[in-house]
Image (tube, rainbow, N blue to C red):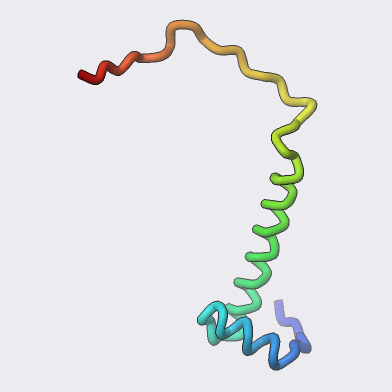
Length: 70
């Protein structure tokens, strides 16, 4: 899809310098992917290990293998 964007020249130059990406389309793609990854990480971190609907899976007894180190 073609889209026209008005991006500050200084911001574009800083992003190119930081990423090493010179192609503008590739730079925008990388930036969008980084934003998506960052937001996904924030959502995961906001759970803080708590998921009220999650049930703990029962453990199966005797399924562990003992490794002997001599």
